[in-house]
Image 1: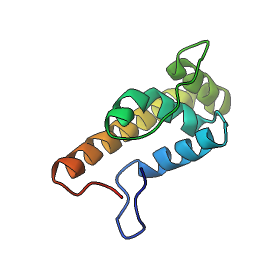
Image 2: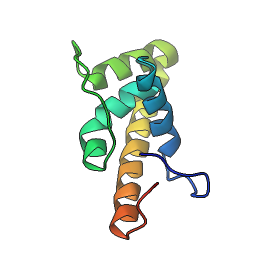
Image 3: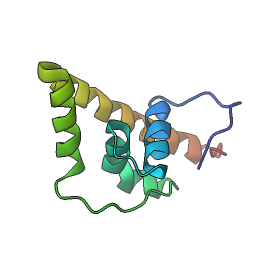
Amino acid sequence: MSRSESHPLLPGEELVKKGLADLARDRITEHALLVLIAAPRLRQLGFDIPQRPHCEPYEHELYDRLAERLGDGAHPYYNSLIRRIVSYEASLEREMSRGSRPD
């Protein structure tokens, strides 16, 4: 699923785009982990997100990476990422329910 440049980005869409691009390149980045966390709902919205076997929950790995990079700032940043991805999913659901399905 993609959106054409004529549509404004939904809140958090840039995170999803980066995460999907990283997953397509088989790279597990912070953005890719965020997309994998949101994968069940994103799949329901029509995204093709591959299943990835993983030792620990994606949430834990994302938080650990953020803590390594941001120290004490990891917790609020992690929470903001989760809020943004949830906001994106909700915005996309509203858009789709109005019939203006993304390209």
